[in-house]
Structures are given as C-alpha cells and as structure tokens.
Amino acid sequence: MIDYIKGKIIELTPTDMVLECCGIGYKILISLQTYENLNRKEESTVYIHHYLREDEELYYGFATKNEREMFRLLIGVSGVGAATARMMLSSLTTDEIRNAILSEDINRIKSIKGIGLKSAQRLILELKDKVVKGEGSESPALFSASSNPAVEEATTALVLLGFTKPNVNKAITAVLKDSPSASLEEIIKLALKRL
Image: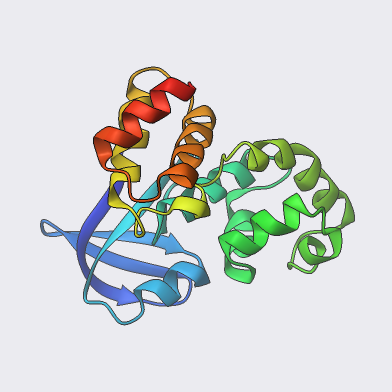
C-alpha cells in the first residue's frame, strides 16, 4: 500500500498531475485544493489514496493527510464515489466541509455540483458523529503539529500503545490546555494519566 510519493512535479493541472519518483512518472488525480497547495513547487510529497476496481486503477493525491482523511470519509458514504468526493474537495476546503457537516448546513453541501438534497442529508447523517470524534483529520486544529511538533509524536506513540485516536486527541488537548509548552515526555506522561 502506498502512503505517499515524494518526487518532482513534471506536469500539474487543476485536475491531475504527473509526479516523477525514481524514474517512474505517476499519474495522480488531484483536487483544486491540492493544486493550489502544489502550484509553485518543483518537488513535493503527495499523500496517496489507491483506488482499485475491477476495471480501473487510479491514484488520488492530496497535499495534506487531513484532506486525504476527509476524502476517505466522504467515499465511505453510500452513494458518494471518488469523483464526487474529489469535486467536494475542489469546491470547499477540508475545514469548510467539516464545519458544514457539524453545523448541519445542508444548503452549503448542496451547493456542490453533483450533490442533491438527499445526498447532503445522507452525508450529514453518516458523517456527523465521525467528524465530532475527530475522524477525517490527522489531528484537531486546536493543536496542529506546526504549533507543537511534539504533539504528532505523542499522538503516534499513544496510538501505538493501543489507545484509540479520538481518546488520545482528547487527552492531549486537555494536557495542552493546562501546559501549552509541555515537552514530548511530559505530554505522554500527563496524557497517560487521563487515559
């Protein structure tokens, strides 16, 4: 299974790209959101979702893990295919989709080409609980890895110890509210007390 491909951008359009890695050019379908993130770069890391069916094999690429996780949540909804999920991520940002689901903003979701009233209602119904639990994002916006690099490592360590990601995220959030400048070791120790 391919997690990401790091290489040189050979071709880039708003809908797809060719990324060369070790002499192989990978044709990757992308969203407008990813296109905007990669537009001015020569080399990049693209997170991959491998789409495999009897009659086709495609790579969907994303500039961030959060966007890929949202894509995977969207295609998990009955009636939402990969093309529709990519259209959604081209029309709205990952955070806008998450907020529309949480606030049950049917009109916002319906404004996306290819999404009707029933599809919008189904998306909200099936994804609201998952989004509340923190699925569809690598880590909550409250403590992004850019603001505290130890958070990502602590999250990974605690998940590897057998705790669920939503519980780990809640514990780390609580730790960082009390001690925003905690070191990696402190985050893990204090989070373990809360789990």
